[in-house]
Length: 142
View 1: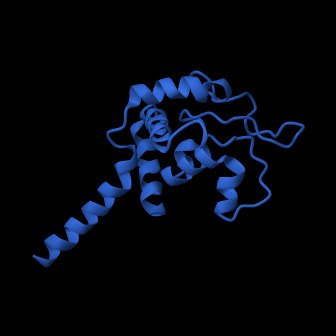
View 2: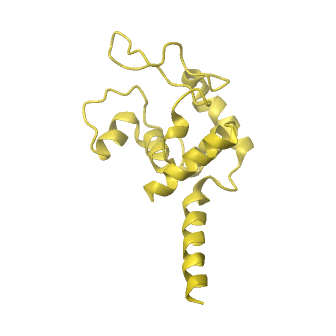
């Protein structure tokens, strides 16, 4: 009985960690991505050219959100904060200072649910292995 309780607690933790991108509206996320994100991150999630090389202003171009980028390397809470608060503020909240991010804040134009739909759409385009890695990183962040 004690083992069953421990196993149930572990399963509940994993389920709770993944709940934010489960059962999201992928179609709504795709439409919101097209409206709010594609102008910088590309209609096919391809990002801007030379996204790893800062421009003359020191700001990195918008990275791809497909599997060739690094979005899947980050936990869901960071991706949510990054989108709502903007890159610089989200990183500063985590102790990373001096990073001149070009990512604006969307908290005045998108709700948390809308951003989660967008993130679920983006995640749905990745291969299963990338989804697993991102899920594991999200679990580690909890």
